[in-house]
Length: 218
Length: 218
DNA sequence: GAGGGGCTCCCCCGTGCGGCGGAGGCGGAT
DNA sequence: ATCCGCCTCCGCCGCACGGGGGAGCCCCTC
Image 1 (cartoon, rainbow over the protein chains, first blue to last red):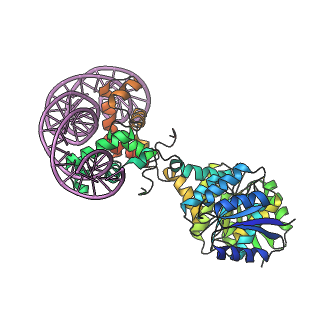
Image 2: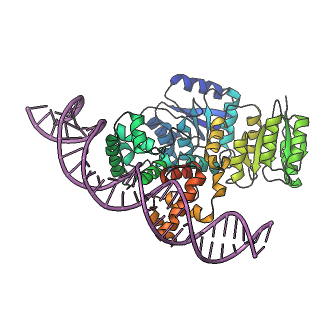
Image 3: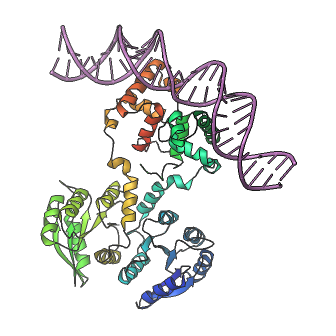
């Protein structure tokens, strides 16, 4: 019984390359292709393949959304393998959380590719069990629920909050930003209002809980 | 060229079962076994296999330590696949962080097992790239570097810090703990001293950075 | 029995902080 | 031309906070 595969990637060259590699294997068959996320969803729904090789970065609907939709709407969804160029692509975590069975890099060699496809095709409790999903979920917990107030902060307020969360006093922040202490106080007041907190400590907590500090790492 | 494998598991039955499965494949060869972590290290060092199937839970030295030692001391270390019974085993994260190339469940079927072995044997940039390692590292960051001061906090100080990090004022903390405000001030002062911070905000930051807030979740 | 650490509480003092209200300049949107 | 949002700053006020002391209590260890 051959493994039926659908390729979803916005670049034709990538699809062609993948198809060429997979065609060389007698037990693998590429039954369809898609160039956008939306197309991927409909194609997969129609063809019901065993495995989908899904690019994360695609126009209209990205690979994560497409993955979600496929898994949510199909009775017997295929295994979805996310394809990416950069191994630290943040989207990869999102994709795993969305339910992807695995991911692989575009620079992977042909041999590894076909083995990966075979592997995910007939194993659901193997290399990517829910443990990895839990890992990804844990990792991006903050990102999943980016509190509404984050977007409402102005540039200056954003800076101020970051410095607050670095443990600086208003005076220090003023010095660091090259403005007067009174200005900082204004910004702080605005931050407190927008975050719905009453003092700088609570604001800092909110910042951490919101994953606001994830970028600058520690 | 055959793939040379070493099995490390404290249960003989598991080793036998794995050996039986792998022996059926012409391209796979089990060249050695080990029943403890220490034994695994020496056996692997001597035989220089391509792949090691390593149980996480073993007497003396566990699979994580063994993995670390193997990767740290060998010039051309083998790929190490961690074997576990429970997919949410916390040790799995540790193992990935230690440098394991992947993990698989004991209830995995034979087919998946051999494919997994083949996969890790000849691919280093595929299913378990550094991204997963980064994920695991990120996940257990707090566990890896539990700042020295955490242990030095007394019971009360611990409680106080948690409440501080929940955004409470000294008065509120006093009420919550059923003591006087002056007492709370004392504890706060102690916390600031032990954490090396100058105000409650910095203390809260330290608490978050230390993963002090991981338990109560958000 | 003497010491030490943890928990409890007290005083005083200075100040960083946050609330309140106001003001001027500057840019984009209508 | 007008408005509105953002950034900049001012004064005044009250309080929570943190520093520096000290004190009594309990329990455990030495």
